[in-house]
Length: 223
Image (tube, rainbow, N blue to C red):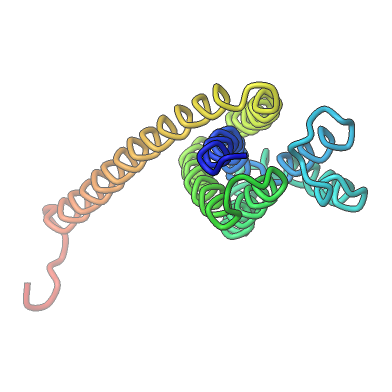
């Protein structure tokens, strides 16, 4: 085969695997164990040939299933979910990088290092969105918002990862849109929380000064 034709085939294959790597990275930042479990099941059942055999091993599927159940419980408990997210600040990006590298290695078209960088960085960004949003939600006194958000995340990851197997390009676009929206929402929430804290500190200072200047209140020495 001519060199130019080979380069063209490699480019086409690289483009085809890159959306799947990006989508898996985005999903790993939200629920890494669900991604490993889903890909492993899809590969073991013959639904796709893109999944490497290392993710289809029985021990990997069992471990991913158990950890997924643990996350499904911890992720729905206020403040416990934030602790869980803190622990997974390293685990999720590493998982996204490893899954991306494995997918690239399976296709043999995209350098594994590049795929790992894409998967890991995307997972890190989506993890920050998830963790930051949860910290904001935990300011709510009721637990139902945590349950609703966690359930929506689980269903979203399952749906988009499954869709990525059949249409990786469209799934990657959806994941990119959700990532951008999540970053914008996170920035908005961070701004609101900072403004709320400044106002609360200002009110406390005003109350302190009002009490200190109240009539009949004994002045401190030197006042």
